[in-house]
Image 1 (cartoon, rainbow, N blue to C red):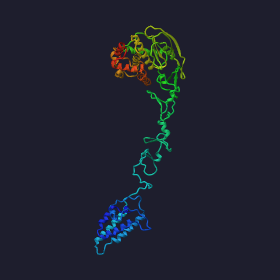
Image 2 (cartoon, one colour; image 1 turned 180 degrees about the vertical axis):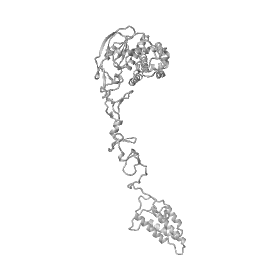
Image 3 (cartoon, rainbow, N blue to C red; image 1 turned 30 degrees about the horizontal axis):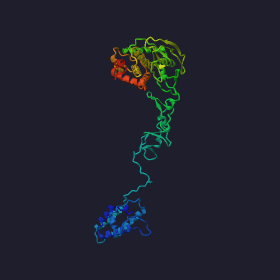
Image 4 (cartoon, helix red, strand yellow; image 1 turned 90 degrees about the vertical axis):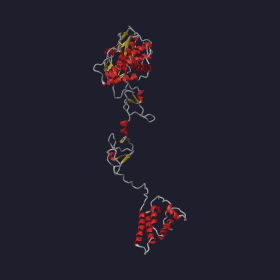
Length: 508
């Protein structure tokens, strides 16, 4: 097309160079013939649609229209030949003109010929081969070397050599059409699932998805143990001490009364009354160290679950911690069966349990303290500290306290004893709860009642028992503890106890 071969600027240049009227008229004659269209039998060419009177004016002012397709190469050659002949005939200089005019004509012809060879438009061809990318444009996401020419794989802007496209877990090539991409690391779907899909800590299988396609599981708030929701209802054993569920590949100990104990808790479990006596006396010393000496010798017995439940039914005072009561401060006379000798372990159960009935006679406000057997030392001690506080309150004349006040202050004593066992002395003095020490004229109790300190496993158990106390959801034991603990931190233990004696409640 004409608009492709001759630009607006070149036509203007031609008009400036053609100074004579003959040249302008001859050249314009050829242009008009070209615009009128082909003769019959010649191939048709598109041209701008203008009126006869406006034909010449439209040639100078109408903006060229970009062609959809380049003209064929034969048309370009024909156009070159036609213009060259026209220039030879109409622009030929007369003989009388000097050599300077000849040079001008030659320059004009050369300029027009050069303009015909210029193609300012480059049409887009989607089927043409793409130009090569500059070096360094594609870098393999695995070997980090330049890919260059040849086959490659790409996904989300990341490129790989075919031989580098391997699973980041097993190292084998990925040939499947579906794979998983984590950052820039590709994985087989099964390998990714094995690495990142959560597994149940109980059945050791992948946690299934729910009806919405989401992974749903339960998690212990302290230990972080993840397990399938169905294990809460399929009678999977749970440790009665640390509350961890029993994994399929882990051995638990059956205590014979419906309770199970994990091996970690079994390692420090207190199994009979004689074994518990040193711990009991150390906690009495703890009370005495805080100027809270117990003048009466209160009997302490380690009992089975059934014996504790029977004693609880015969006790008029309450409330009792549900769903499991682990300790009891008796005020009534009863006959209780206590464990006389530590049972031996046979397989995953206890054997040769020997018990002895014991009649408890009331000599003061407190008849005896009963504690469930088979619990770890720190949990047994925290129960003893709680029940001893009940005994102390009754022996000191604290009457008719509501459950939230009495159970709350007893939980504080249990919490403080655990804190003294698992935290170093310097850390305990930095804690807010040490404010009770200012009200005591005695030295601070020893760091731990266990000779040689405690192991890391036992320390974690103690932290869990403290977590249980602090996060109890019941009104009497949970809310009562938090209110009592705040009062002790603010006013000290002695002032808080004095306020309870006078008002029956905690200071605000």
